[in-house]
Image (cartoon, rainbow, N blue to C red; front, side, top):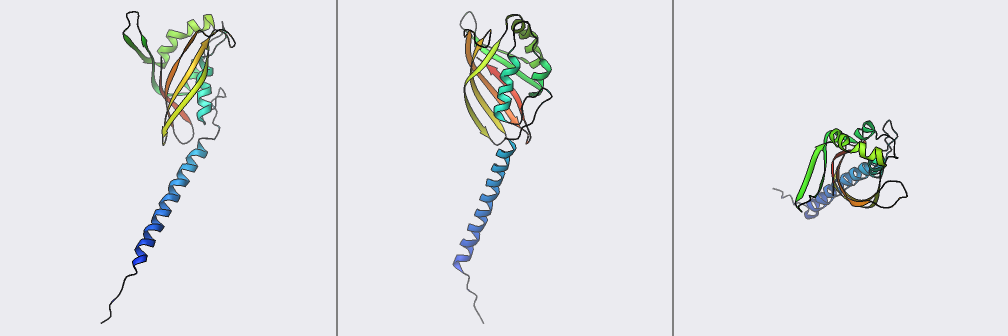
Length: 177
């Protein structure tokens, strides 16, 4: 009768090999996702929705309008996932917190006339990004003006949630304060 002895290093080597393969697969996945997010995908208005920088630039460009010109709702809607809800937070005249939560179309109905009459330019001043896989949260501080180089008339923060579908970014929602 012959006894078989197991190689004590065989199991350790196999575990190391499996771990190395898993690490390679994860690294390739992260690299492919990062490369995909650097591809330029343009809307029919030329807005780059294939990169995070591109969609944030478009987010600000679409609400910036010269006095007397029209805000383009169709252009803005191509940045957002269908059915998106947006809003603003703030403090009312009595000092109580308020939240205005609405559809993108209703937001445009409520704000476009003011921006078109007075001119409106919003410019990002700083950004913090958090993401896990394909969901992104962007804190984007901004300044507002009536003209591109005019006096600052307001400052605030945008809280923007985005989804990357493997080809492009979609805005899932945003709130400002």
